[in-house]
Every structure is written in structure tokens, then in C-alpha cells.
Length: 193
Image (cartoon, rainbow, N blue to C red):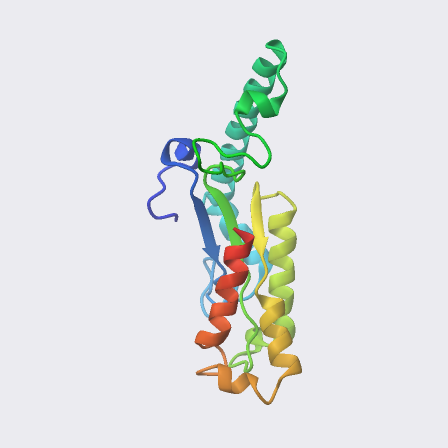
């Protein structure tokens, strides 16, 4: 499922990268035919569990917690606080470069965007909004491990709902947004990372 990452428990060796999962709620999931699972948070939550993603993230989190526990225990034994033991200090850099506070292979889920037009009932505004809220609840609950949620839905919904005369000109098909809005989405993502 994650290209280039064989095991989330090996991420410490691969650097301090991030894995960004873009929402793809408008695709069917599960063994049933048709549009089964489209914009359905329960179906997607089950898919992430069954696919092995959530178990792998929970395993990564347990490994990181063990590493943190060992550092804290050795720091306490040496009479150091955790900050000194890790070499991190607020406002300082390590070898001239700031050390990231993000965990190795930090994971981020990016919500899906607002649609100006629904081509199917499961793409209706209330369904897409409910899907995003459900996925936010799933990922922030910790059921799938430590995955951060980045919201771009509310920005695009605000544009679509409150600027109805301008919004269609910022979309090339009234479902997907054009460059101007996507640049704003990219800025939201960069700020969150």
C-alpha cells in the first residue's frame, strides 16, 4: 500500500520522512460491486484495518514508544532530563540544522475536497462532509495509530458555499479544483507538515 516503505518499523533507519495519504473517498472499497463504500467512513476504516495499514501503524507506534521509554530510563539513570538526553534544545539546532520533532514515518491523512456538483448520490454535499468528519474521527481517535489529519475540505467548502459566483471559474469540471485553489491546499499541507 505504501510505495517505497517496506516496514513502518524500519523508518528510523530511513530518515525522518513523512507519509501523506491523500483522501480517495470517491472510490469503491470492499468486496461488493458497484460504488460500494464510496464516501463511506465505516467502509474505509475497515479497509485500512484489513489492508494492514492500521496494524502496521500501531506496531510502529509501539516501537517508537519503547525507544522513547529506553531513552527516558537511561536519561533518568544518568540524572539528565529527556531534553538533554536526546540532544534537543528549544531554539537550538543540531550541527547547524534544526532537528525535526516529527516521528520517523509520520503519517498524515488529507481530507477530500468539496464538490460543486455531485454526479452520484454518494457524492452529495452532505455525504462528502459526513465522510470527512467520519475519517477525521477515525484517525484522531487513535484506532489506526498515530495518524495526523489535515483538513482541506473546510477551505474548499467555504469557497464553494460562500462564493458561488466565483467558485465554478476556479474548477475545471465543477468537481476538481484548478491551480489557484490547489496552491492554497498545498500551502495548508505544507503548514501542517
